[in-house]
Image (cartoon, rainbow, N blue to C red; front, side):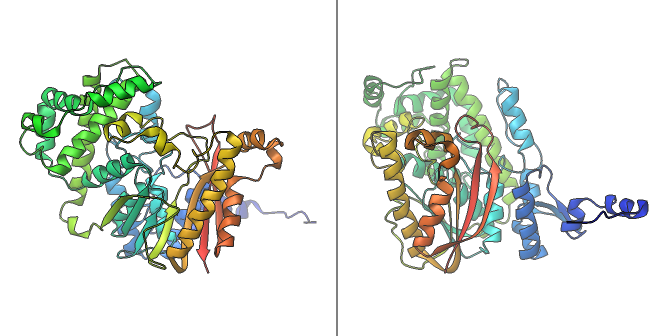
Length: 455
């Protein structure tokens, strides 16, 4: 038992004169604004210990300044984060204001894909995993492509794989947004009505305010799709460029999703507002990257199966991914219009998707564990020795408890299941961190950052 320790007034004043940041970090390192979670402070501390000052300036995630020099992360994030439509809710505006240095920069904010990473966190994780420019990082379940975009900006080569063809399309369009010629995009915005009509003929028109899609609706939408060649002449000059065309198409598909969820604005008004936002985002990041475009690394998004990776043994320097939150989120539900445009049968794809396979919840859970065992086996196979595999995953013990018929406190969380499966394949736990989830309170309240090392 500790005995009472009488601290003098002078000693207390000395203790109070320094905050926690001054105790952890050298004076010449200034932390980024809005750093307010324990896991962020921990990653920032690791960065300060692992990275040189030059590396923090170029690729650091949690520092605004090194001495007198601003970091590139701060420069990318400062200013207005994204150009939101005037009718945006105060909650949405507040989210981007309070997360300006976490997620609202580069082309990460394009398209509202569910379950996105915070890009700043991914940047920090790649740094503490020891990934350097020229290394290759893999995301075997790339989703919206956060790992690939962030790695490209950091000079780290990347490969992303996803079972959804729409994810591959979306990620490529977001990657292209870093470097595409902007004059045709500006011209498209100035001719927004004709561009909107072009994509409406090409991709079909969603039923506004209709969230639930029937087979009849999907079939009707598919039958209205026309050949691209017939209408390409109606686009402004330069928009026939494949990268520009797909960037504009992503904006249209984005607006279709909004139109399905809400009838507050017409589909055309949604499209114009989203295209303005896409152009704003591309202009902002391209100003920052001007003159350094040749430093961007190669990024390769692929359609494929994380259970059978098309990669050689020991060919990857690091793995980062977030597996599906078991069956808590149906990632295909929001993407059915977009997948329909691509001619992908959603029900058939659902039977292949990890976390969605199976009929009952119990069956889905058992198949999920089998699938994740295969995924971790593949990650271990392609990862070089002594390198790291980082998994970001949420656990909903209430949901799992109902499925298994036990009390939530007696449930083995998905995080612990993945740690056991990783160990089985030579991936051993070196660090586990907890972070709170915002915006998913009814699904899960926290998620875990699990860092495994291949021995």
